[in-house]
Amino acid sequence: MVITIMKNYRHSYFLFISIIFLTGNIFLFNIDSLAQSENFSAIRTEVHFDESIRDWDGFGFNYVETAQTVNYTDDPQEYGGFSLLDENEKMEIVNMVFGEDGLKVGLVKMFYDPWHQASPDGPFDHTKTTENMRYFVREGLKITRNRGADLEIITTLYGPPPWATKQKFLRGRDFDPNMKDELCNYLIHWAKYLRNEEGFPLKYISLHNEGEDWWRWPADGSHGNIGEGHDYNMYWPPELVTEFVIAMRDKMDAEGLGMVGITNGEPSNWFRFSTWGYADALYRDEVALQKLGLITSHGFYSGGYRNRWFGPHTSEGIDLLREKRPMLKAWVTSTSWSNMDAKNIKEMHGNIYTSKVNGIIPWSGIQRPPSWVGGDPNPGSAFTVREDGSYEVRRGYYFYKQCTRAGQSGMKVARTMSMDSQVAMIAFSSNNTGNKDAFIVVNWSDEDKKISVALSGTSSSKFSAYQTTEDETKLYSPSGNYTLKEGKIVFDSPKGSVTTFFGD
Image (cartoon, rainbow, N blue to C red; front, side, top):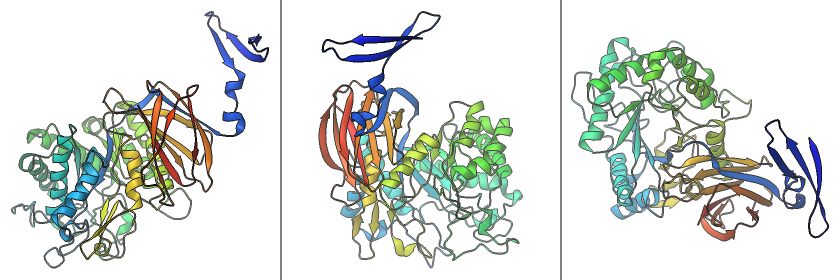
């Protein structure tokens, strides 16, 4: 190692460390550049657009129509609320989700409820309980394609019909193995309907919704816990998941659905997927792992050691499966809107950078609160529909918009760094999609902060900023234009804020 003193034209001295390897290469480090930014007056952060971490499939949306009712004829639940709105109001919301000036989501989740076939040999009715959900997706698809983009749709078995369980009642706990072919057919019939009748670009079928949570039933499985706030479920142990991944892949191929992938279903969070045996079962079953089309889980975060809902972000299970299948993608298929604040976008950061996913679809973005039995445990949303037929655009919409417009389908997740744990950095590189390099700065603290962002790997020299604040003085509002100076942007970040920067 050689220590070199170098003198500039103003007679100031800079210290450089020259490290000479056997190859003869010399690396120079300016000691001043290694100090905290702006002479310790700003938080040092970095965005490296030239260091791609993984493919990005986009952010998404989920319209939930029928989730809990035990008697659809007497109680036709419509949780999304479109049944209360007029045509103009519905289209206003659809445009705010899919339109050029809206969220511009690229992913959509559609639930498949238990009410489509009364008996395993009976006729199907795919329209009665899904009218508003299909309307939302149908109109959203038109808008998306009109702006030159497309959607990727995943459909999730919310819960099987009673006949598929040993108990033979709604939310029966245990799968009846004699109904294996029939349950596969139940899923395939719906997939064909979505693709052939509706013309929807269905990409994946997901096996279950929080089917790992065996605590939701009494030990003897004598009742379905109906009326205590839970949505449709059946218990899916790891072995049943691997069995159905294989069976569904084979049957889907035989039925001409080779273009549709099968997923492992959706545990409550990545911690449970990683540690409750689900990732292990797929890892050990080579056939199931090769037939798996996508890793899926809910991304709910609970980091404290307070109760059984403990579930921090982790990539352990995803990493395990990627040891054998490095290109296997993973999506969050439900996650909380929390308090619709900056901390919620920190949760997005955790799913992207800690859980290492390729796409995120939050829990129901349009909610009609009185129709959720027992009160909604996840009351945050983008929109609330009131019983008088009006609706409200909530703060959650604008915070989510900070992410969705930055991370469009086909972009790449870029590497970031922040030397303050209350400042999270999210970045997406263009990847030749026509979208702009973009990065997101999340200040989830209760203090204003000056932030210095050092950028590399972008052709943009100017960035336009948009900001949302928890005090709602800014709701995805223009927040200035910035020119890079010595490769950096320095700006003041208000407490409880999210700021998104788009390259020129």
